[in-house]
Length: 365
Ligand code: GMT
Image 1 (cartoon, rainbow, N blue to C red):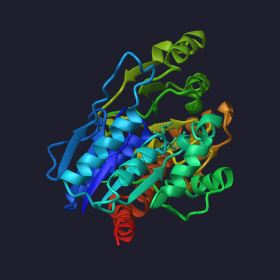
Image 2: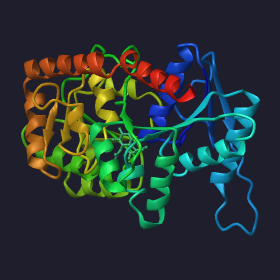
Image 3: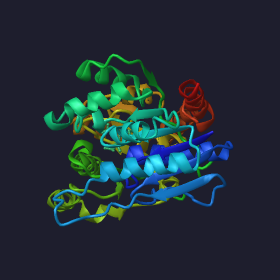
């Protein structure tokens, strides 16, 4: 099939899922056309069948806000026409879904252009819930040829909050278990890792509090990958709690799998999480997650089997789980094995990508 994919090309779960999906589809013989304002960070354009079309957002002094949504729609229509696309698949409702709808309407007289919208989380729980975006988010979901969510939880939230009438398919996130794989550990068994965009919803300060609590009992260090608005506050807290020397800020990373290969426990103390992709990537690498019981995370992690789920904000409970894993190497090995098995058996690219292919067949016919 010839598929146009649009996502946010920057760091963030939805862009990562869209990019990994496009590459997996290309490796299965599809022609994939990424349409976005910048080259998606994880996209390997060397893969046969992967194409990239940049959206040029022309500015003009009159525009307080350059109309990206319109430039994107025009580019989608142009690429769809030129490369005879069968469908568009957009990730994150606002504004991608509306641009796809416009592109569809622009081509109405010459070709049918179905589009799939995949909802990822904050497009529903935060952005879509803003009064200024609420109605248009609902409209974009209802007008999509098909809509998917990355968890059952997010489907339920979408239906409850927006009251949308169309059916929604749940297609969980996936991981490439050949690239994300357990490695021989050089780590001495004391390394925690946190990977996020450092937005308030991720509660990155809790990672510092967890580290401080753990270090009262055993030596441990924390690697923090990613960047975002809370980064400064996190650094200040590390100094206040006197653990700054044990925290390494790694910034944005292109090869998360290399980092995970050197870690022992993943921290995911989020306030909301539609799915928790960082936890899945860690699990594929045999790194057990200590996470919060929020949103759809329980669809991925089975408490006390392949990771832990503790109440959001309960730093003591999360720290106790981390301590247990760091001080009991047999427990850590058992959980690492179970985490890897979960990734392989339920969330591997091989098992999830065919679900998207079936959906594409459905919308084009
Ligand atoms: O806040 C983020 O983590 C970014 C956000 C996005 O849409 O880019 O991530 C969401 O999508 C990920 C991929 O599907 C999910 O794994 C995350 O759980 C979800 N984040 C939230 O719901 C907060």
